[in-house]
Length: 470
Image (cartoon, rainbow, N blue to C red):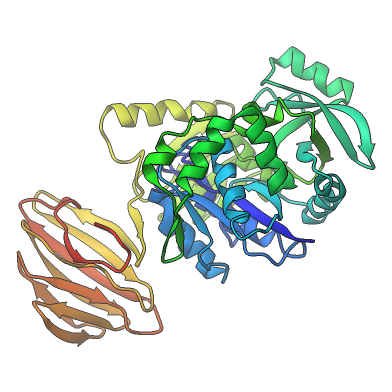
């Protein structure tokens, strides 16, 4: 079976702040007790279903995080499709379908979100296989999560007549209900949560999109008229895609088509939309606590506690969320975590960076951690991946001092190349043209001390960059 996975990884949700930030949202996070990020878990879940590399849809700001996480899994080979701007799910999937059919192929597209948890992989595979015959016949199949509670935070799908074993016609989509209505849905046994996962032939989706939203299809065709390959990324025409109307696949196609079908799925699914959901899907101790990092919990029950960089101790807590990162701490009752978005709104209104950035910032060559800063200085711990290189650059307002902690650095300073190893250092004066590269097989780690009147990231004048940054 020719299944092409399409993974939508362009979201920038902030309901898991301070773990999730605008530039490092939840799909790139590693959940308590896991070794892979949510994106990586989504990719790993495909083993046994298809051998095709996933086509991952991302935005410009997250592209290097996506690339690095796919590289770690050996799943990176020009398979990241970049959206210049967000235009919701219908245009994103249209781009994927058009890209998949460029060479005359017509695969089945398994459309998944990068930030969902599915605990029962076998049940997920079985549901996809149940959907295959209908999808091959031209049906647009979605997967409905069999509800376990009267959830008011999800849309619902009402089942219609039985089409095949375990597959139903869609009788209708309904918006997020109030509690009484949700209780009725649960009692009836006719409704499933709308998961936002799909299986359909690429041409079948494009045909229905042409029928109901030709304006979206035309804009996406124009955007993909001459795609450009850039490293492992496929870029579309920014102006054409920016002109595309924004709409969800549900509104644009699924609620209008007569070809919609639904496969009910019970597989331990969660969209991890809030810390309460994260607590539910996490492994817990005998007291119902989900603990991550250096945590000491005394007389603490049914709590989610995460410590990123220091010891966190709790005494006498019940049903509480405590999240410690390198630059922020959140404490909230578990039943109030939906209000975290209010904190993010305040951070934005105050012009603070914590809503957008972690202290550790990812770059195509690795990452840096802003360890300390003051009026005229800043200290960073820089990690450069093997074979990676920072841009050739200069600064107008700051000098830098690099001290190698681990690995080997190839440093170019005003045209002169030299190698530094552990405990060796180099001084980079204001205005000096310089570059840093890791020629070795292990990560390069160094301490960078910046001194100057202005230390902003926009005081970087790139003269040459292998990653295409201006």
